[in-house]
Length: 478
Image (tube, rainbow, N blue to C red; front, top):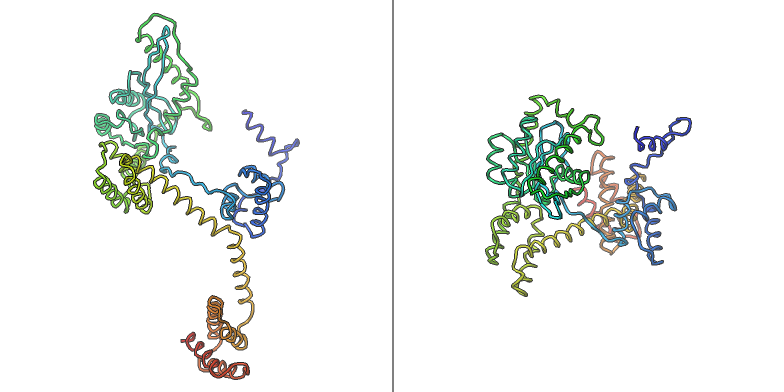
């Protein structure tokens, strides 16, 4: 029994094992009222006037304790941003692939990566590259290879070792290293019918599973120091033995949250139908999604390179073509203007990294402004009060029955009012009242006759005003 489980039970049950009543505070963010915003703004302004620094998490806890306002920190931040009490901040976008790395079948997707290990023999440090294959679903460590550097041969050797033990996987995820995505590796994977899934343009070293395996391995193995006169081959053999022992032990342990070990999961392969379905899914994922704006973005970047005569090599160009698709066209256009101004001032700034630095800053400013506009529209106190006023006014209008007398009174307000927006609001109410009256009368002629008689009975209106009011009625009824 885990200690964490016992601790959690202590919070859910009393001494007699009777379940404690836990208040559910979910869904409160959708019920933010003007009074709630008013309290939060007052507390935040009081802290600002006292010179206290506003920290979001501690401020959220303070609201829960002092004001009994149970809201999430994100909602509280949006309210503060909407009322100019907190600086808006947005996170950098990431491809959705990283959130979907966890797989549903064993031996479907493997992660291959390399990491540097150091072995010290007689005070001399020997560096080796350890290439490792890890099954994403079960976290099973399979093939590995130790060499002086990361090469295509080592990647193929690792995949061969995995296939010899567990058969061919459906796909492989790897970073953008020269060895992982070389022509030899691609040709080998194509012959074995294994799809290639690059880790993503935003984080070339973040395929996740193998990175986690290396960190755990280095934590367990620790530094390897040998006091011997043996050459580098001894160091290599020692490292291979240590890695093999670690992998054997690691595969016998279940991953946190799983009941079965990695070996048990891999010993029950998926059905051919499940493999076929997942294989089709990988093929679709490997194909790049067609962005309707991507072609225009690439054309803008090609024009920028030609116009400024930028010096760029082939790998950097491919990288730029990949990254440009994750920015808005408006941000690219603004960045081109800023880049042109910067180059006119200093020709040394005429580089692609400088342009992407401007583009990143402009895109971040646009994202923050969009989020600020959203917060202002939803949680600004004046905006919320105006919406409450309009809602209350609408309820009063719908509650009162529409009569000829009410319509004539509203027509008098239209004739007397000279302010533009008030007159427009009154005319809109007249149209709504006429629509309600139309539903009450079968013939419009009778309705017009009663409205005309009611206008004629008003002594405070002149003949021209009565004609103007009746003309407005006819326009609304037309």
